[in-house]
Amino acid sequence: MLGSFRAAVAKARRDRSLLFASLLSEESILEALGPARWLWQGWVYTPAVTVWVFLSQCLSMDHSCRDAVARLIAWRVARGLRPCSADTSAYCTAREDLPEAACHQLVCRTGSDLERDAPAEWLWHKRQVRVVDGSTITMPDTAANQAEYPQMASQKPGCGFPIARIVVVFSLAVGTALEAALTSYEGKQTGENSLFRTLHDCLAPGDVALFDRYFSGWFDLALLWARGVDVVVRKHQLRSTDFREGKRLGKDDHLVCWTKPPRPKWMRRKTYASLPAELTLREVRVRVTQKGFRTNELVVVTSLLDADEYPAEEIAQLYRRRWRAELNLRSLKTVLQMDHLRCKTPHRVRNEFYMHLVAYNLICRLMALSAQEAGTEPWQMSFKGALQTLNAFLPILCSDASVEKCCTAFAVAIATHIVGDRPDRYEPRVKKRRAKEYDLMNKPRTQYKRQMAK
Image 1 (cartoon, rainbow, N blue to C red):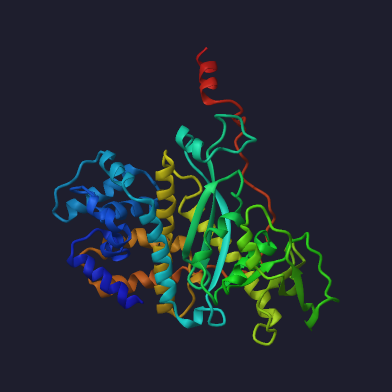
Image 2: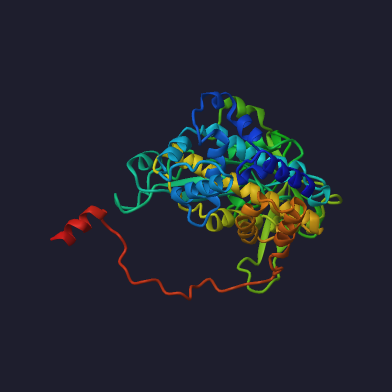
């Protein structure tokens, strides 16, 4: 894997391409654009350059268009090229022309390519595990954003931000985002499970889907069963559990049958008729003995029925790894600052969301190649440490320094930042830093300004 990265860096130097060409090739970008690439007009901001500058904006701590264009100017001057204008309007126009389908395609491609190249020892029982979780993101308070992604109904007009719900499917082996979707926060069919159903095509027969109890409804499990996808999910708290019933497989481990409920309004009659009358599932009780954990006991439901091939202890350990999805979302929303996007129109917001996922996948690739070189697993690497190392090394990778030395030092630097192994850590859920004593906004900003002007 490191050898292919060295080759990509060497090619980027020969082609005198932008820094990100070593991480995402121009061929991949043009292939994702498809026929749209022939409609592109631009002297400086070609399709590849626009995507590369967009990625640098997502990975920078500043996140501004001005900073991204300044990086492009610095690179052009260092290459002996004519500097482009520091005005950001041309870059914003080029970014506006990026098709959403192309940005979405780049997410899927960068995520699946890395997973395909992952070593077999990173898999779980030689199977791919997909971890699913959802969250929310906010965006600037503009009329266009409010129209498509309205603020929460409990907030007064002008006092909140447009908010969108997102669902991301991650690879457990390498941590990349394989698929993602976003929609408005409130309304019919805008819940996380409804949004996840639109992403079922990214799951293949033989995959294992891992998620929390929000996705544990009968129809959610049955639709995945129909695709040949196994599930590992926490049982919903409203479902009763009696281990004296069903077929006993061991202590706190048995098989049960869940009967098919009436057809929900969102499901077509043909789809409902194609599902079985009942599902045979396995329930495993997991007892949490670590001090400080809020949950002392939970029940995990799975379609992995063979207790010899999949012991209860391994099912429990796999469900515990579901927390990786929470950490991946934290990397996206906190480290890459995706929790509040900056674009002022819905089209640009969606592109910004997808490009953050592409940037996240590229960092995961660097973590994976460093882990493989160091003989460890990528989830032991620090995501923030990898981001900091990337921002420091990118100018050097495309300099005249030795490719071999640069790439080796780069991989070693990332592998050095290991996340602390603290499986039994627990902390109080309190804040030490006091918030500043400002009143919350309870009326539009214009009313405050009129009041202050008086």
